[in-house]
Length: 80
Length: 80
Image (cartoon, rainbow over all chains, first blue to last red; front, side, top):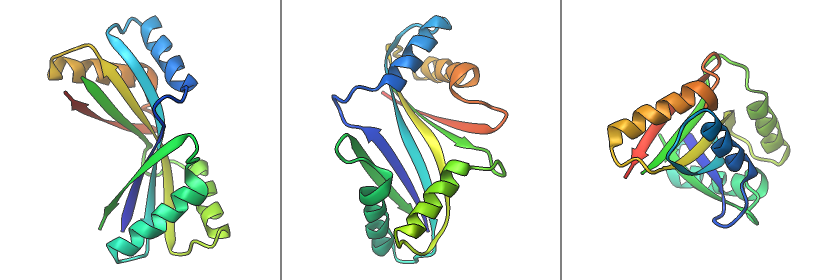
């Protein structure tokens, strides 16, 4: 199975990378950009065949390693 | 409108960050991981109201600034 994980900064947490992108877009002449937030996207190939077990395992991976849950949110999609 | 952009390394391009995550997961005791690929996820808030125009604008942003199209692929979702 394949797991797709999105890790994004929580609302209200300063995002300097997003700000830098926003400024760079403006400098390149792109107008009409109200805001940019950058996050991480991780794809994991799993041997696990059971969707529920895969989700539980990936949830533990996020909590223990992939996301900093103090400042980041994560969402998981499982695809067979 | 909101644009969600996924930027991933092209198939075949070495992904040291993904490899590092894979090794770290193994060291933490997570077995059954066949592979990990890390990409970027960017959300852009746009003033543009027209979906087609928004997509064209974001496509130009990706080609000019956000993605390195030599080694990276990108996909765009537009949400009103």
